[in-house]
Amino acid sequence: MFSFFKKKSPQEPAKAESQQAPTHTRQSWLQRLGKGLQRTGQSISSVFTGTRIDDALYEELEAALLMADTGVAATEYLLKDLKQRVKDTSTTDPSAVKALLAQAITQLLSPLQKTLTIGEHVPTVIMVAGVNGAGKTTSIGKLTRHLSESGASVLLAAADTFRAAAKEQLGVWATRNSVDIVSQAGGDPAAVSFDAVTAGKARRKDVVLVDTAGRLPTQLHLMEELKKIKRVVQKADASAPHEVLLVIDGNTGQNALAQVKAFDEALGLTGLVVTKLDGTAKGGVLAAIALWGQSRHASGGNVVPVYFIGVGEAVEDLETFNAQEFAEALLQ
Image (cartoon, rainbow, N blue to C red):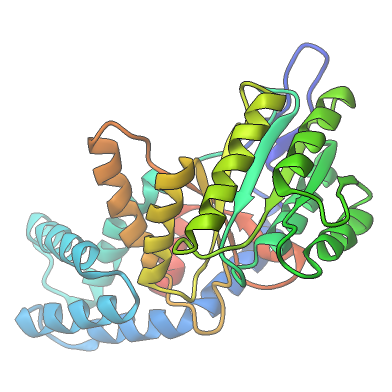
């Protein structure tokens, strides 16, 4: 199991680190990721089995990238980049173009690779949002496990009071991870969040994870509730929330990008968790998110990084995002 959390010393705040897991563990993870993206990888790789680099090859690659949910803009961007790399390297073998595409994808995705930092604030308040079914609460449980096993003290806030059994589901994770949880029977989400942050400060917890209500970005009243939670959290701690994460389902394609844009506009996202990159997941949407990040950065904003990606339901199926590893898995 990987470790991204460094236990703080009395003089040093706790800090999440981009430490690699033991080789055998990381290799096992990469195998699961590659298996999850296998369908997409085979579709793209088949393009490079011919004998010539010509317009037909690029047309087939364009179709394969679009089928992988890369989106029109990101597909055009990658094709232009790839053609330039082929020209610069005087490549004539179609099989060699695959490696150049991996380089192009890695470069595009690299800005999304960033370490989640824990410890600059005590507690570090992490607000987690996402539509119903994206795997939000499960991702919080996995993140809690990794933080706890790395030495961080975690407090959970059951602020998803709209979804039936959400509080109970989070409670199961709290019990499994032996961490505290703040919840109220039928309580107001903002009130629960306020109480949790206040308790986290009083108990000197390293992290407070706030599980907010799942919703669609088109549900305006629920988006307003999210904004209210953020405002109330700031009343409990003026510097909070220190991270605002969105959990997105890797199977939803370009709809995932629409979710990122909508939630970012409402909350100001600081990071993403991409789940369910297994089975039917296409994964190309990360390229579209990366290209959107470029435009966001050009307009004076920050790129919204992908802190973690998940390929299954097990705790070990949540890992830190690495651009090169992802590109290679996507094209295996």
